[in-house]
Structure formats: structure tokens, C-alpha cells
Length: 412
Image (cartoon, rainbow, N blue to C red; front, side, top):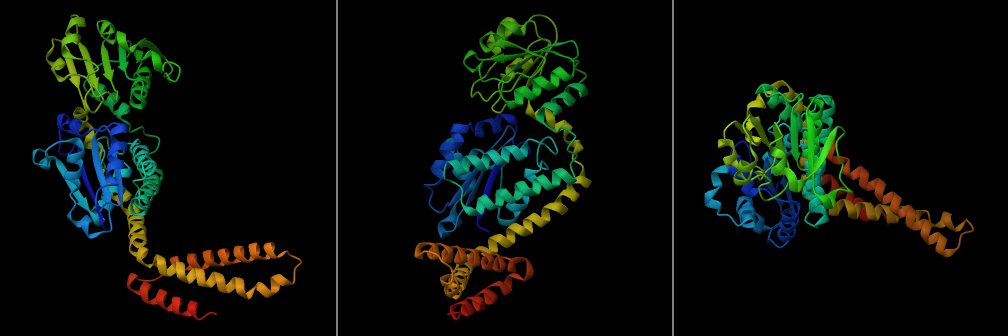
């Protein structure tokens, strides 16, 4: 399989390295457009989440063999490959396919069984499609992986358990014995993660405030139980808060150490940074009475990665891996199937031509009906041919289809 991926995630790279490869939506769009100009690449998908950046490519030409997905991603980020090689994981072919299957249902997430990853994978595919960077190889692979992930979620991983980053934040606070009930909490950011975090703090009994930029006020969705303060007043609000969570997609710090120090008063404060790249300047952790957690703090919650559930999930996913492998191998025979089905459709329409003349149809109407018959017959025959993938061994596909093609040519 001519499929390659290069990924950097929490397993090998600390947050300060991961954030250098983090990509905004506009960065992803640009990279996808540029991938179309790379010799040997016919398809590209980029997954960029709070804990990983992955560059997926596929190709057909010989030039594809010499491509290094790590080098392509580093080039896009204008970083030296040699400085980051140790942090990357590269996969190809069937190994990459198996990994994507597990990734899509949360088995590779920092929060085991993460429910948000399916949506993130879908968005990555949609972005690639919109930029014209998606070929049939990656389109089918990602669609199959998403379908398999949904099946795993319905049969193995408990769907009534919220495994999002926000719920993991709640577990972290509980483990660290940091009270929320009755405490004043500030959430910086009104995106999906920010809203989930705010809702989690409301459920825990916190008095929650959420920042909002004025120009976004009309389109914003505010979780029930939250009050709003303007984003520009976030520093002034710090002195009144016990807990501060930041979850934006800003490329700059939402809280700098210098300005934060001006508004901190005596007393313990907890800061939680749910962003990649980080929102809260790391030096804030050195201030008196401050505790700062970032995405790497969730590593301690990984013990819930149930090996039994993983084994059950892999058993389900194997079916989808085989389905994709069969599709991939059968692609070379698609032109033959098209020829067989076209000939069969034309022959069926020709055989019914005399019968059509018995009806009081205009010539144009007869032609339309004849075309519809040919198309319908072609689709039926094509479906039967594609069914060979499941009923025969791969080595038998070629001889069988060639025999059918010879027979189809002799129909007339």
C-alpha cells in the first residue's frame, strides 16, 4: 500500500515540542493546497488536535517511494528535520491502516477512548476534500476507519461515559484535591473545548465566568449557568478567581507571566491550560501559591486504558482493515469491471430494442428508456463483479474477471 504518515504526539513529544507543530485551520488549508504541488503525492490529510499533528499522504507514482512525510511536515512548519526526528513516529502501508483504525476510536488518545477524536478525524477529511487534496485511497481509508470507530463505540467503549478533555480535567481536579464547588472559575475561550470545560465546572458547583470577544457576542453559545465577561478584562478578573482555565486556538499567550503577576493577590490559584500551542505562559507556575497544569498533566490519567477493551476493539476493527485491504488490492481491476459492465449494459439494451418498438413511444423516449436499461444493467453487473472480492481469493480475481471480459466481448 502506498500510504505514509508521520505523526508527533504526546507519547514522544512534550507539550513545548508539540506546540511548534500545531496548526490552525488556515495553516492546514494552506498545507493541503501545497501538497497538491508535491511530485508523487495524490492525496493528503492533516490531523491537528490538541495532542497530535499527523501528516498523511498517498501516491501512485515512483516518486512517492522517495518521499519522507516527516520532511514534508517540517518543511511546512519551516523547522529543521534533524532537530525533531526523535519525536516523530512514521508508519506505512498496513501498519498505518491499523493505527488509523485504533486512533479513530480513541485507543491512541491521551484520554483513553476520547469521544472527540471521531469528530476531529471527520473534520480533517472534510478539510482535505474542500482543498481538493483528497484522493480515493485516503477518502476510502478514512471513511472505513470512521465507520469502524462508530461500531467500536457502540459495542465496546461505553457511550454513556464522557471521555472528553473536559471530563478528564474534572478527574484531574478531583485527583489533586482541588475543590470546585463554591469557587469562582474563569474560562478563557468560547470554542468547543472552552464550552465543555465551562459546563464541567458548572456541574461541579463552580461559579463560572467565560470570556467573550465583543465581535463574537452575537454568534456565541454560552453554556447554561455561566456568566460572561469581556475578553479584554481577563487580567483584571484574575484577582477574584480561584481557578482559571484557558482553551483557545490563539497562537499567542492569553495570559503572560508579566501581566498576570500584576493582578495576583495572596492566596492559592489553579491554572489549567487546555490549549496547544499553550495559552498560559509556563513561568506563571513559579509564582507564589500558583499551580499550573497543561495537557501533559493528563498522562497520569492514562491508566484507564483497559487492555481488554482494546483487544475487543481490535477484533471488531480487523473486519474493517480487511475490507479496506480488499478494496485497495481490487482497484487495479476497476477498469476491467467497467468494461464488463458497459458491454453487458449495451447488450441488454440491444436485446430489448425490439420490445421497446412495440410501445407507442417517441424516438427520443425510446432512446431515453434504452439508456436507462443499459445503465441499470451495467450497475447490476458491476455490483456482481465487485462481490468477487469477498467470495474469492485475491489471486483468483484477475483470471476470473479476464474470463468474464472475454465472454462480454462475445455477447454480440
